[in-house]
Length: 262
Image (cartoon, rainbow, N blue to C red; front, side, top):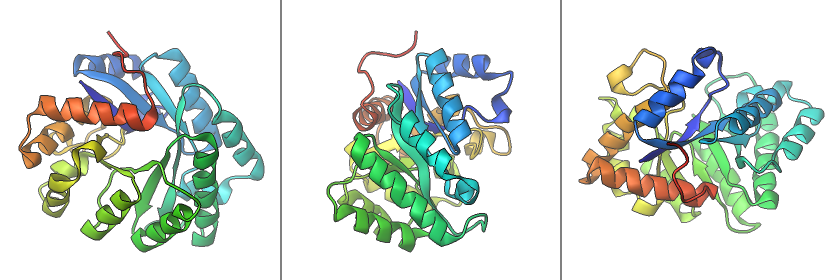
């Protein structure tokens, strides 16, 4: 039993192949997939997919790399979409200094919007952080002054200090295919001590395929490879990790307790 807490099923990589992709996910033991919006348009598509497939849930938001081209009308759309019953999260939001698509001050503005929307809706935020760890931590500290935070650090690959600070804020840490890479020993050391009730697994499909499929299109079924590696570094069984991370995902996103697929 597994839940892929972060995928992008609206991407062109899944066009014409989504039904077989979800079938493979079910066969791999997945009971749910959260598909993540990155623009107003993709957020709307995420909801459409969640309406079409019972095991698919949606998150809505504007990715920091697309914030420069987003409008106030787009933000109003995100606010409206956030009320949909199958929307379980707000994002993908955050900060990215690797790419220069969006000025950092614009990214910060949109990050703050998402954090506030998360607070008002009661739905958790989903944070993208790339080469912007100090900035992201500062914004989380700022937001925490307004009250407790509820969210997840998507595809976590940060420092031990960042992990501890995020956990101190009550956040979840989600591990993706990078956990399986040979060079990711430092990340595995962090994954080994994160409290069990704060662990999540994801694919970020179609990106970040695990080592077993590196260089190929990623898909939700492959979350099992990350879960298996997580089990190894924590001295647990894959079944135990599957049960724990599934329970964690259900708690964070308030998903039904019953299996979501046949």
